[in-house]
Image (tube, rainbow, N blue to C red; front, side):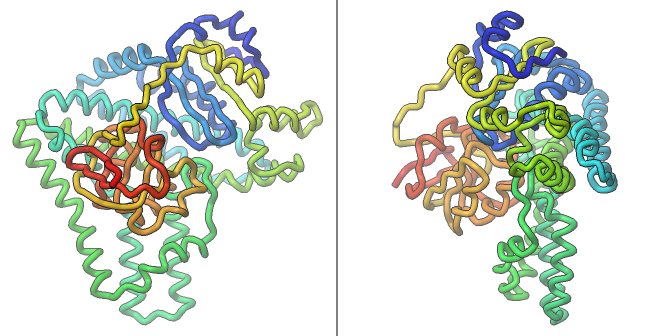
Length: 484
């Protein structure tokens, strides 16, 4: 892999001219730092992807302005990769083998985060990133596996609502486990008349065990006090209400298992294949939750490096670890580099070459690309796929970045490009979820089912058509959102 950094439009033209002629499309939007995108495009896609799924993309691009970044891919490559993957997943043994790879990657990453200690922050982060990227590849791979299996299974399932009943994890997700554990603790508190000190101790222990599930990749890690304030309403509920909630949640898994079994019988589906599909969905959600553990483990080391360089924590994340090392030894003037990258940065993977373009060069490259953009019709209606059926009326809160989650109040309609584990507390406050992106195996769909919230995904335009303060009816039975 040849990495050009800093690169120019001319260097792309010279060494990878095909990148300027393919048709790009916006695949996904995220709020992530530069360093993650860099390693994702120089390690994950060209090196690790083929090891996991036997195929790779020739072209991937991430363009960012601050933490707001969008990933672009090439549709023909997406179709080719999914075709190859579908052909390789004809055997249940092959699917099982793939899922074992994913589990091994998660276990290795989780163990490193929980047990590895180092005084050398730079060395720690270098090792951390190697394991982090394997875990990232595992998540990316299992997402593609689930999508491929959904298409394969869907050929034999005529009713879309029946496919939704199948697309549920085979066991409770980490967030769901957290809900159950918290309810059990609060019930114990109520029944034992625990002292304030005992209450704090029990809740802190819970927060230490499960709290990381809501920090995602690089999101701010709230202190225990903030988390406690978020969950204070639960402490004020009656014992009877808490026991009913716990009973309802404990019955959830049996309920979805029963429904899945009915769909399997209805269409004479292979129960072993469906079991693998549902296990894949669980691993897809679990992997994203695990990134919060990585965030928690790596945070002190980023803080340490930022202090050594005399810059803000968010700024150090605009450097690769190699650039941090050069900066610490006085070999790199990093302040202007960081400023340029914060304004605009493009990381391009093209064949065996990778390019990092900063500031004006990044802006120029983006203008020179062929990017397919969907025309948004201002019809006053938003349409998508019903991931969880039901209806709700509420006030729209559009969340474009994590810092905006606090504006979602009880009974609001949460509208976002997509959701991550960090969104879950806000999702609990919402009466319905609407996203631009995603299919029936996406994060928003799975978590909304566990929360029992009407959810419409894959609208393509909800965040552009709707604005804060709009009062809407979310009809997830029809997959529509209407202003009222």
